[in-house]
Amino acid sequence: MNLLELPVTTLAHLVQRGEVKAIEVAEACFARIDVTNDRVGAFLALSREETSLQAKSIDEKRARGEALGALAGVPVALKDSLVTRATVTTAGSKMLAGYVPPYDATVVARLRAADALLPGKTNMDEFAMGSSTETSAFGPCRNPWDLSRAPGGSSGGSAAAVAARMTPAALGSDTGGSIRQPAAFTGSVGVKPTYGRVSRFGLIAFASSLDQVGPFASDVRGAARVLEVIAGRDGRDATSLDIAPGRWERDCDRGASGLRIGVPEEYFAEGLDAEVEASVRQSIDQLQADGCVVVPVTLPHTRHAIATYYVLATAEASSNLARFDGVRFGARVEPSRDLRDLYGATRDHGFGAEVKRRILLGTFVLSAGHYEAYYLKAQKVRTLIARDFAEAFERCDAIVCPTAPTPAFLLGDKTGDPLSMYLSDVYTLPASLAGLPAMSVPCAPAKSGLPVGLQIVSRPLDEATMFALGAAVERHHAPRAAAL
Image (cartoon, rainbow, N blue to C red; front, side):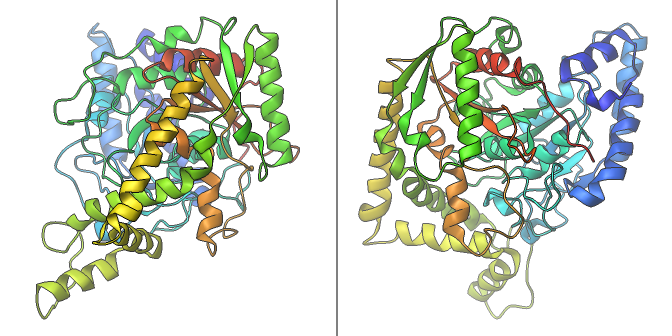
């Protein structure tokens, strides 16, 4: 029995019943990482000793007859933007090389409390700024389905870890598509919850009004269980909603018959790969055969989403990343003539090209004489985008569309063309700007065998419908693991 190919829920059940020991799972996890990570580059740091101790503690609890948590013995990889006590956390940047946080992010603490195993930190685009995990200061991550291709980004390491079955689940963060797009590229399930569902405390910030932590898993039910564990109110995050987690795993069994699914015409226009469109439309037809009602909808302000996002997100990044100045923590370049020189030298050394590009753009749109022309106008367009969704949801229960316009692209193919790279998130950005729950679930692969993702967007706080539809899609397309 290959423990790491088991779904999250099955593996947890076996450990809870004592049929499999948590230490056996930990050993299998590191054995798999050892034979695959050099080729894939999914993990940046491993916690072998701590994970082994954690696994032994779980087994001892089981031997004493104590109840185990919902993720007992399940390895969950962590994106390297989630601070983890006693484990190096870099956000993929030289600015934080060697930084060891003194505390856990809330989601990390909740995973520990649920008896999950936390084997290590995964590769990512620097400070979550990228769509291919190529801007990482520590080398790119590769797609397990084709090592010459990108796994998506910025949570590419977490997606690759799940696709290569190094772990059955992982956490990522999604600002404009950084969970959903890599999930689509790697054939994983990836979930961005409603903004405020999951605490951001301990997530190294990119754009605070957009950032959300969410799960990757090999199947929809596994993603639902992980989200149930990490969701819920946290007093340390002012944006955290005081709403209890749903019973989303149960919703995976409710079926999709009778649900009205909206198909937006703007998401099937020029620029969409023909094979991706055929795969997504096949899934829509299958949902219709399952009893769903297909409803055409329109989201007219979608065409402004990229411009809006890259004004708002970069403005927030400019503010958030001001804390990395060489004074408080992180990199520090010495000697310096004065404080201004210290700031400049440290930030020039610590930040990569894409991060610098976004800081400069964000500082520009917030500057005197440009704030009203760019930032304020973008906030107004964001409202229009959210209003489009609200009007569409008067006609449907969820929106179904492609997650990404193409399958995974070749490494290096877009690094010299930032706009082309940004366009890979064209279908995920609108839901992020509206704060809506959205997930990517695998549908029929392209003729090349590369994965294709179907995106499901539901009403605010209606993750239940999203999971019901995701499970319905999955019944037609059993989860696949990359052959490495």
